[in-house]
Length: 189
Image 1: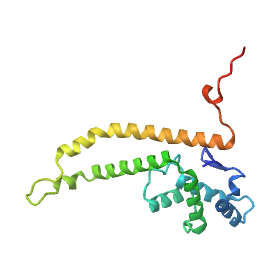
Image 2: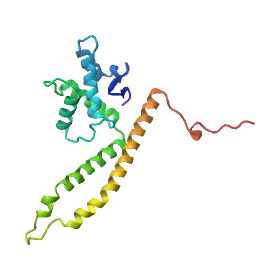
Image 3: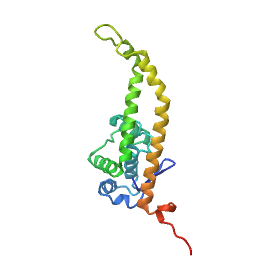
Image 4: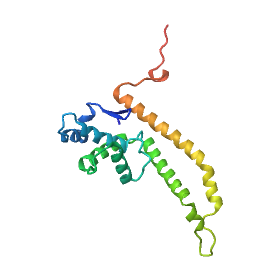
């Protein structure tokens, strides 16, 4: 989403971003002069929602909330309240594109594959009613052979999503550059 920039662990929020109602509520409830609480809340929103976040791989919402809260130093009693829920919903809705949704589905699939591979002991012990293995060793080794390809493709997909978000941000900020054919060709006579 446009308006957030994380540089060396410090989040910068543009004045325009504070104008959006959910973010304005975060700013207005912070009665401190430096607005440090509001900035911490916005850092939480960004880390919780952004594809570029280090916590994006944590798919369990509660685990992600607790991990981010601890890592950025929010108070122990801090929790996602109604104002934060509104900001998170707003951020997610304004950041969603077909590409990000496809990427999100891909990450969920990779997490399911990871769970499968983490349960190989149980899978190999499972038996059908004839005492034959339900999951064969060849099923697991076949999945393992695919891991390298899955990892490579997921990295590439991530790069595409990040690239798309930067392009969208530049267009919204008026920093768009055109390639030769987008501007049209002009010939001098």
